[in-house]
Length: 133
Image (tube, rainbow, N blue to C red; front, side, top):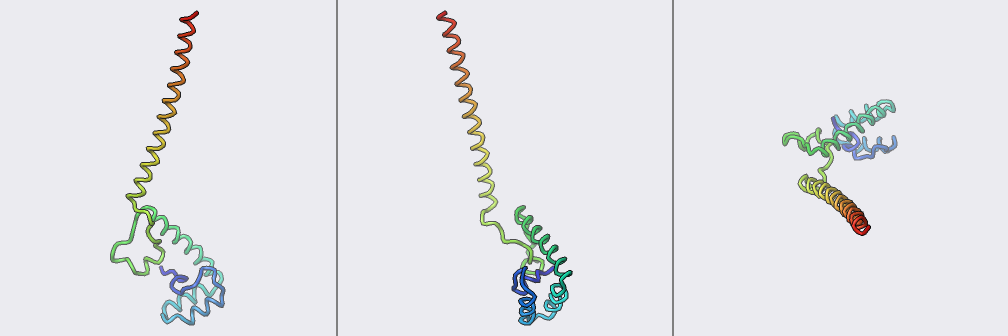
């Protein structure tokens, strides 16, 4: 499915006048006919906008999972809703996750060691108190 807004070069919330101007500038007859039929009617445009939002969400999800189109699909109309890849590589994301887990574990160990130290001091104080009494 084509992203009609992207292909016409207009915003999703473009006014009817902006849509008409974009349709006049469009040289591709099939695209022009599809856009006029879908975006020219208010009810169809609302349905298309819902589908457009869903496809954008799916594209974002695919990118987040690291999925891409096969090479023979790239650059075709199927890529209209594919989001650009994240600026952070998957390796960098993994490193960040591992660092977060390591930091969390180090905090836990520091807390445990701190609690053990307090317990040891209490036991020592108790034993010293019994020895002197």
